[in-house]
Amino acid sequence: MNKAILGKKLGMTQVFSPKGLVIPVTVVEANPNVVVQIKNEDNDGYNALVVAYGEIKEKLVNKPMAGTFKKAGVKPLRSLKEFRFDDIANYTVGQEIKCDVFVEGDKVDAVAVSRGRGFTGSMFRWNMRHQDNTHGGYKVHRHQSLGSGPGVGKVFKGKRMAGRYGGTQVTVQNLEVVRVDKDRNIILVKGAIPGPRNGVVMLRNAVKA
Image (cartoon, one colour):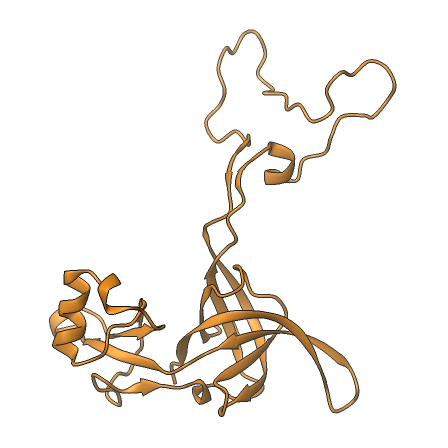
């Protein structure tokens, strides 16, 4: 059975197992997702659900998005995401997907946009080592060598250099669901999940479980 849900990363904490072991967990607030559109093989070539999540003021919704929600008869929400499922027979437009689709012990993949760090140097971006911190011989310790000799006269494509770091989609695989709180719409996932606090996270069935 395919399972997936959108949620908000609240941060990290720790819980104790029945044996008294400390388990670091990420807290994901997974309020109900609303099905906005259903895609099938006959019309679209594949089966999928388009779901919406997160509160938003109606004045911030543009006209195309407002039309999509109006057609589905659903209140406008902030985020839209497509879940590709093998079987969509049990879903209808307007149906809610709640956090209890997952249970304790499930293996999930967490997909989110990593924290943006702006323009960074090559040491921080690519984890390069610095030059020797000796008292003589070197005047710069964080300077990167381009590595091309005088006969080359160019920088090769793909060279690891300074640039924009972060702000890309990252997937962490095979995380374990430690606890599901239906009353508070909270899922506790073992380990770290990419992205900043209050960032949108997608939890789905582990592909390689």
